[in-house]
Length: 304
Image 1: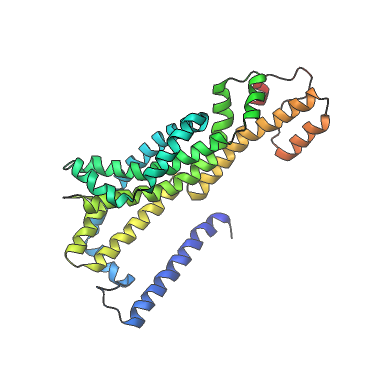
Image 2: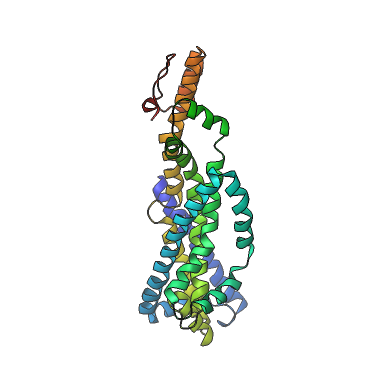
């Protein structure tokens, strides 16, 4: 079985197993739908309200994506500032931690009242506020782990701060960034749905969920929860995908950072007349293009 087929079949089998067990529990316990709706109770709701599910899903999706996009932009910028400045990191990190510790369910009503009637704005704002923290922290940690000694070596070899950031620090941060992005996707959906439920005259799947609550249509409420879960899975796997995100980060790390470290070791080996160090670097990183030894070394173009 190839990897692609396994990645498709494995979650499907688990989902089918969970749904079957859920259906059996409801049947065995003879639970009424106002206590626990079974999966078979959800199908009529999807058939009856299919047009509403399509419209509401789109409304939820684009607000979530907009808030997540803002979180990526501002989270990356804040993370870069914290990663390169110890003073900024020590000043901003406690503030970010304190803000993240506030239950977001308590912030949602405040934002809804502050921007009453501006449903699109306050929904995107909450999605942004909830999801930017893991991105900012991951970028900060990734950048701050570049050892000062290495930065000194790079500068002594003629690398500018921009070169160090663009070709070394940034690719080194990508695996942590993509890992945080998968967490931020789910957090953005939580923020969007909270605002849609709380905000007066809300929209999206949260509004549909609230309609089911008001009318005591519990199967509809469960159907909305499943729709939200499906949107989260689709968004997380869109484009690069869950494994693809990690793969992209690793690939870029190998494309930029690994050749750099191999080249740096070769350069140091040349300065110390140690050919074994360069050979070890070649074998360890297996990049195929580290710059060659020579007492004068090779310019930065040889590394990159």
